[in-house]
Length: 61
Image (cartoon, rainbow, N blue to C red; front, side, top):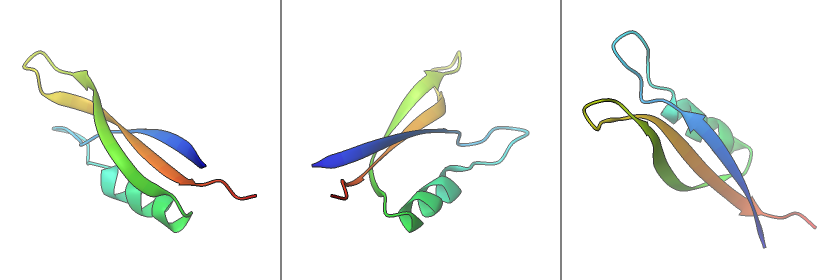
């Protein structure tokens, strides 16, 4: 059995930096495994602007 964690992140923009690598590295150190990245918001041109990163890890009994 697994537990899941959902983290919102951004790939950055004109005035901001991307944070997805730091998010993945930080959660990996805590034992989470990357499962999938899903776009959640889009701009007027159809480009994703926000993402949800999904992590999983075995439930500790």
